[in-house]
Image (cartoon, rainbow, N blue to C red; front, side, top):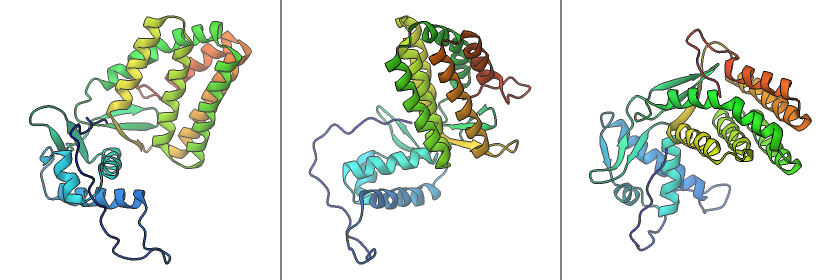
Length: 260
């Protein structure tokens, strides 16, 4: 889910004039303009086959009549909805998304872009490295490190309260990246962080399965991660390793699916 910024310097494009008033104010918010630009591109996508080239970012920005910043926000919305993919290089540009593959994560699934066939393997390797990261955190986490981990736990809790599974998963990955940063083993930390970046970079959305309501599931995962940070704070090795094992096996299917 990332794109290459436009490098050419261009004159700013005026924003589209508002078509109506909002509670007595004629001004449009940037988020509202981005939503409308995303809707316009979505209408175009409905008229073409999956995998079709829609044009360059500049082509579509001009079509929408918005600024570069507003169109980048619209593009982010389109990618989050799984509607477009961005391909760099000659012949690249924006394409209507093909049917995305899925990676099952406990009682949720990640919807991925069509170029992400190796994400499932990345998740499995990340799971295998988790106990090593926890061992290093047990030995090396400072009070400041633990305080930083708790901020990520708070962000996960806010996503649960907002019923926003996508924000939850991204906050979850930021927590794991922060745990990896504690390790003095630069190679291990770099490999682990690269795996997280690969997974996050191809994720379009988080979808529920029929096994359990997604809101209930992410609330359980929030509690598990909170307990894991508490165990790191106590330097409780047995409990921390038990929790990371539960983290990587709870609610898995017979196919041994990974969890977030």
